Image (cartoon, rainbow, N blue to C red; front, side, top):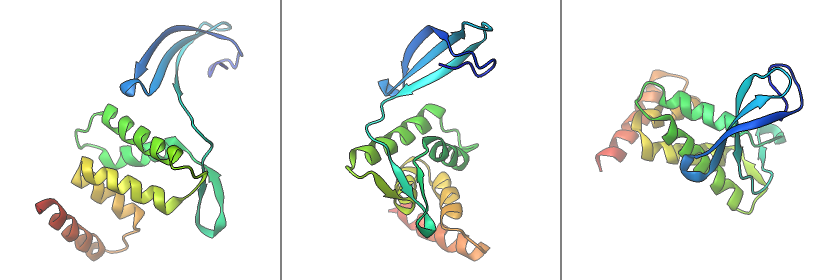
Length: 153
C-alpha cells in the first residue's frame, strides 16, 4: 500500500479489525519509508459496477459519492456514522448482487431514498430536495406533505 504522506510503496499492517458487522476490515498501517501511520479499509467487491448517467455518460460506481450524499442528508440528525456506513454497504451489496454491471443513476437515487425513508424522515426530505431538484419552496412543501402522509400511516 502506497503511503499517502511520502508515496513510499511499502507499509506494514500494525492492527486489523472488522467493522460494519464484519463487512469491512479496518487496517492501521505504518510506512516503511517515513514511519507515518494511516488507516485503510478493505471491502469485498463482487463485481465492477458502471453507473449510467444522463446523456449516456458512464462512470465507475463510487461508493464514496453515495456515502457523502447520505452523510450530508443525515447531518445534525444524531445518526451514528456506523448506521450510515451500514446503509451504504447494504446499498452497494444490493447493487453488486443484482446481477447487472450497468446501473442507471436514477435507480441508485431511488434506492438511497428508500433506505433514508426507513432511517430518518428529515434526512429523506433533505436528500429528495437535491435528488428531485426542487426549484421553489412550494416543491418542497408539496413533497413534505406526501412524506407527512407516509409517516402518519
